[in-house]
Length: 220
Image (cartoon, rainbow, N blue to C red; front, side, top):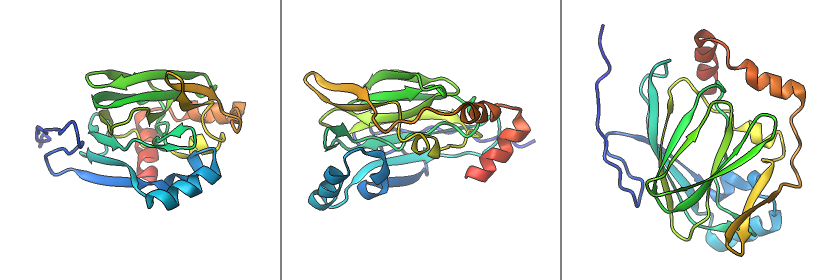
């Protein structure tokens, strides 16, 4: 049996750069059109800012099998669309009983979470803060500061991501907007609670390892 090779990776907390032959992808503002409430403000921002990179992900992806781990960094620019702060698309894991851990490297943000039944939770994340996202929680990160938000992350390799779970509900139950003390959460007027069948479908992905591998392959 050939064992996987151990590795060490150095992170730049300001840029999110990570050594060690990592992969990367980025999301520009135009890629995120559907996640913001104020469409007119979004159109103005694209024109005025020139469609900037909102966030960039670097990651290491060993074999996508049960027992392995994907890890990397996210760097998100500061900015707003109307009253809403820049944020990631957000997701639930395709195998929903897979957790994720985030570690704040730099900046100020919040992790917006939501149970399948629609219960919201909001956790602050900043340098030297660990946020644990338990199994079955939808989650997205939001940069509520004036500097880049940089986080490292770690999750099981067979997790997969379901990005459409948020869009199917018209967004998450609450939105993070500018407030007198920096930020606040407000109810999302476009939110549609999940039906009992949709909720059951999320829980149904939690079955054994063989199904987890199949679903991961279909989402990669």
